[in-house]
Length: 142
Image 1 (cartoon, rainbow, N blue to C red):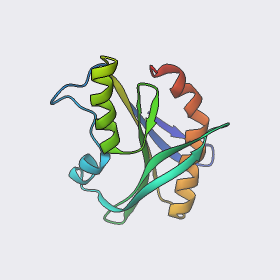
Image 2 (image 1 turned 60 degrees about the vertical axis):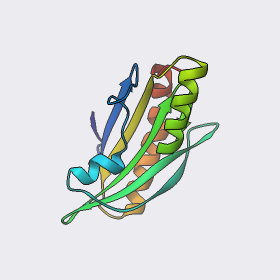
Image 3 (image 1 turned 120 degrees about the horizontal axis):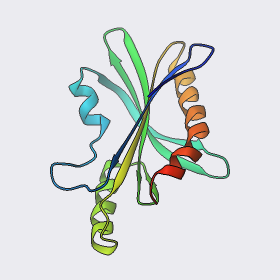
Image 4 (image 1 turned 90 degrees about the horizontal axis):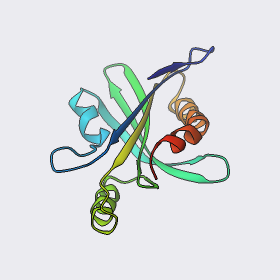
């Protein structure tokens, strides 16, 4: 879904929900698919985002393709947890499949082009995350 503000700020939101994750049908990381689409990862890290009364950790990527740059925030929203690590996502998937018999999970990704600076783009994505998080949290099973 694409969102645009009156100030022409642009955010692309993608939410993928997997009712069941099995071999060959797993949530995958943008660290794999974005380079496959021609985007180079300039840098990455973990960002803290205030979402009201609490703070969540999400993964940030700064991407470049030719003269275009993008900032990406994403996380795994799975079985009541916000997970900011591909490795921990898989570990929790195994644990929950054994203890809860659940393999469902979601992936949330936000992308915006870098216009003025990476810092401004990151701030826009953090603000957008804080706005939409209550709605996302309401619809993704915990």
